[in-house]
Length: 325
Image (cartoon, rainbow, N blue to C red):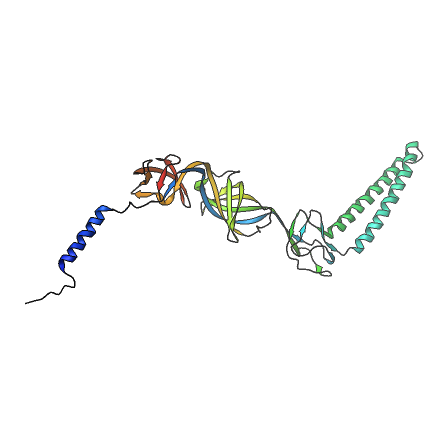
């Protein structure tokens, strides 16, 4: 004989089960809630991504043209300078002395010419003597111009507005032709060069909008436009070089920076929905649309371009309709 011990009488367990069933029938749980989002019209564009490198709008290495010692330096590291501002003066005592001598020679030659000119017009002096005095005057002026040019070459000036780099020389240093004095960059506008696949050649044109970003300024984006497209396609990579101009009023961008580039192709107003609302089935795309009576309808869509978190709806939805996300 086998005895089964039961902690509670069986009829009590059955009665409890019946009561729970009756309570469930009396108060059924509410239907689960869903999160919805409206289909909305926004400015949209297809995006072509690339990586590019920044360069200054104008950039030059300032070098010496004579073997001479530095007498005065008028700039410091990272200074902003104006066009034609003198940056470095070379020793020029000898040139200044030659300049005074040549200036005196010019003045004397001019006086001799002006003295002979009225005499030649009256016939008191030979025409050949007048021509000789004129030639001497012009020769003296040419010599003076040459000395002035040599003196100007001993002044290193900024050819345009910009920012200078680091200087690696001091007063008294001997520099030779080709020695680097400093660099000068015009960073008011930056050139951004990047390769793009030649398959996009039909949309690459000057004026195309560009958005660029850098890890150095993760919370900022820089906008500009394409200024030029190269005339040749690289036969190895099948890509073409594109140059864009980015305004840089805050002077944040520096030459040599790596930039992530997005070209905005075919800008338009488009109907978009959250990307997570799509329900793919094979090659078809569906969404669940909430009707005015709060019923749910599955509807097939035709989609277009995408951007992070959003997808363009070409056909199948109207502006303002709610979709389940």
